[in-house]
Image 1: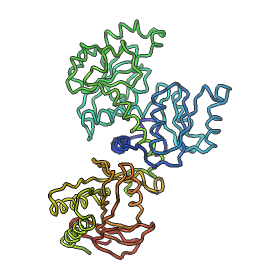
Image 2: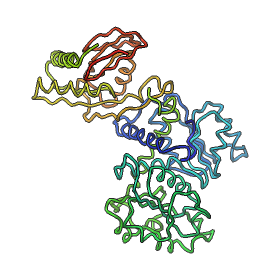
Image 3: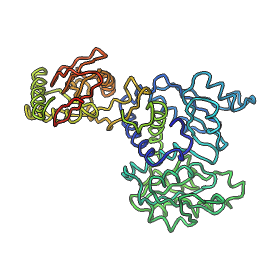
Image 4: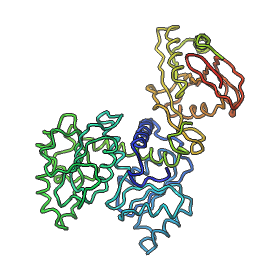
Amino acid sequence: MRHLLSIDDLDADDLHRLLELTDHMMEISSRPIPKVPALRGKNVVSLFFEDSTRTRTSFDTAAKRLSADTMNFSVSSSSVSKGESLRDTIETIAAMGVDAFVVRHRSSGAPQMITRWTNASIINAGDGWHQHPTQALLDCYTIRTGLNRRDGFDGLRIAIVGDIKHSRVARSDVQAFAALGAHVTVVAPPTLLPPSLDGWPVEVSHDLDSLLPDLDVLYLLRVQRERMEEALLPSLHEYSLLYGLTDARAARLAPHALVMHPGPMNRGVEMVADPGELSGSVILNQVTNGVAVRMAVLFWLLGSGTDLTEAP
Amino acid sequence: MLSADDVRRALTRIAHEVVERNHGVEGLAIVGLQRGGVWLAQALAELLAAIDPQHEVPVGSIDVSFHRDDVGIRPIVPASVTDIAVALDGLTVVLVDDVLFTGRTVRAALEALNEYGRPRAVQLAVLVDRGHRELPIRPDFVGKNLPTAREESVIATAEGVTIR
């Protein structure tokens, strides 16, 4: 595999293999000197056309732990603001010698386009409403370790709550969780669901409260304030009353249930309770695991020589 | 080439040589190389415990995939996750592998070990030395020297050693 553009690119075996590779990366991260020489001499360029701190920092840390060289390219300080086209930007940077581009772009499909203009590996770090595959992988890894489900998610009940329509995290997570065998329910007001859920391996609910006691994982999405201006929500307060995680709702979760959030959190909107007080919160684990998962992806694309399916 | 009994005898001799060289087992740690060295490291540790039950010798295993010099050239599939529970500072580490061939895995292991501390010394024990070294690496303890052709492969298990 040369690129990671979408969870679609991976079958269940690939997912398992990447998650197993992540175990190794966690061990590396736990060492006194968390660095290995595996990707020495490889050049990894982050190309972020949209704001992000955690994803960019996470990829940067991951590349450095594998001894790759890293370069950051941000739109505000670049020629893009002088009117350079995406293609010219890519070709110019690629000419400096790049092994992988980590791309975030507001337009769905931009990373796919970029694969045509360069020989480097492309890793999608979020494109529009489309996909955010490394987020889905780190979420899978967090559930796998948090609930000790190394062999898959058969029988797990996962609810993803919030703005499904505009969420690339939801799209990627639904595919990955379902591929591993979980039973996924998306929970949202009708205005925040896509016009059609044909082909989504999910159930739909508008009633969070009835689901709570049976959940193994409650996954909260960030509610973007601009949705208010588009009149998709009457008010944040109303959203919070119906779908926010309050102390009362948290108390109705099973004791083993995990609470997850991709960040950044809106306190008082989708997250009303104090996440620090929630026994099931694994939100900071998600961040830690994110670095290891991205190390696994970088090593898979740049370091393993060929598919991991072949034994040495 | 070696029967199960031969393997057991060779290991017992190596255990005694390790004790002799290090004047006992105090300050030793055994680290097996993934994958073939892991069962050997375990077996060696049990033999050492039988020789000197007073001192417990820590046993670990190390996966060197990410330290190899052929990353990106050939498929690299990491084995089990490295498991080294003690800081190696000041200890004498006995690295254990089943078959010593080019020496490149051992080189990678030496580099990987540094990340777990600074051992006082590192010694190398192998069940089979089959020659064809590509690096200046020499074992301290050898079960059996086995002349082989480069293209042959050597399989070493507790049931014996065969060449294919």
